[in-house]
Length: 259
Image (cartoon, rainbow, N blue to C red; front, side, top):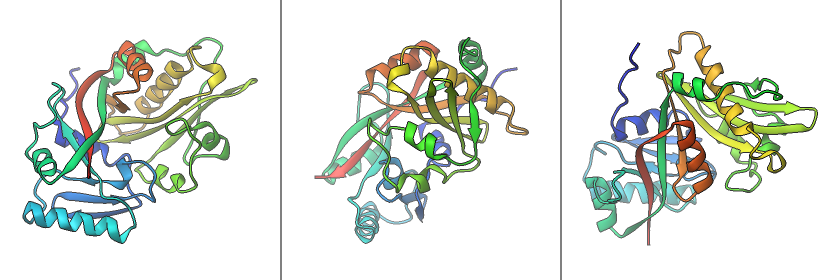
């Protein structure tokens, strides 16, 4: 059976926003102002999609006021083309003209769920993943964000989604790896994939991806058909791994900050 077509970059951004939310989210017309205690750019940036209900200068001022009130620097997350051109979005152009510089270009990569199930069967010698509705202390110890341990503020962001699940692969040698999954509107969002340093290049990452795919396929009534993830373009090992698994780039986004 053919899978439904994916939405355009703005539409997919809106869907993905359900899977990684700020602790506080405030609408600004169709824009969303997000604050997440400083943990991750995604949870602490404005998502400027659609009409803010006011002029761009007014929306920019309201954005800056929101982040000033929360003692955070203003940041915008903006989808861009995958052709290498950064200024393909009128809103992106407007932020650039206002003096906001771009950084942290990120791929949004997708794959049909059935394809991921085919390419990531259970790895012999590794146990089935354990799934929890909230992150245990062991899970939190296993998740490194940009190579560093999590701040205490991370937990509130990690659980802010519809039906998040926290997967861990553990055997007699200890915890081999962890990942987080969220199902929304037929999509499985995969985040927080972290493999223990001593267990890398042993199939753990692929096993975790497959376990999340098998979990998503069994969620009653979810109708999951596609998997997405987000990875920094500069993270070459991760991008290479996901391409080998069959993920393709749907679009890119970057962040803009005033300079």
